[in-house]
Image (cartoon, rainbow, N blue to C red; front, side, top):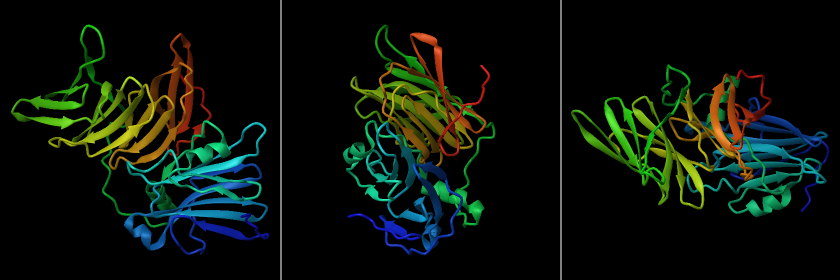
Length: 368
């Protein structure tokens, strides 16, 4: 049914919970861009009493000619973000996603689409709407810079919103650190059968099936699992932060490759949390100020090292162009992802992203 708005009217679509339509105390937008004739703002605000429990409200507001459409998300939504899609011969569309953060949450679905000319909502997020989104937006679906409501809400405290108390994040005083590459141990031919590394005075190994063991003088051996999901581990990176061990690793089942980031506590057999990496050719992750930055082909993310929740995440469809990932780096406020064509080592391509939001940025002149 068409949405008819009079001049100056505001349409409020509350898709997550029934909340007041009263104007919230807005913080600075975490995203702001133009799409066609409309201005788009994505904002995280204090959700009143709910914020005391660490919850915030995500708003997507589309304005054009004195009229606005406002979409509000709170309960059941942990990530929110939007982008503009402009395809040749087609009118522009505002694409957005809003979804929860658990392992069962459908982050490949939950698409929303808004027409910036009429302000009509053409699609609302749901658990099985990827095909409908592709019909409206084309394939491959766009990359949407996502932010967590929790981290964005806490960032908004500087704009007058109450900061939520939280466990202090342990910050590595050494600043920027790159994960170490575990030494692959392989037979005369074939993939590695296990990986070796050391943590302090302990020598550790992880088999290609994900069975881990660390042993040292005067201490009982610590056995743990690195979830491999019936695949095999083909590359492993390790990093110690505080008293805990972080591992990022690539997996393959001969049909596909992907990765994971996990956090392990010594003495415990299972990871405290795990973060999927939906891309192949995982680069050595980088840690700075307690957050872990990950990159693989068609995938880049910044992860809160304490909770395991992505601060932001970008996923793209791999174009099969034959490029490989060569390096992930942080320079000031920029995340740098370098790829190259193996047949032409001089063909290095650098992509720059804002470290705080994950949005694409123009790369400055960088030293070799």
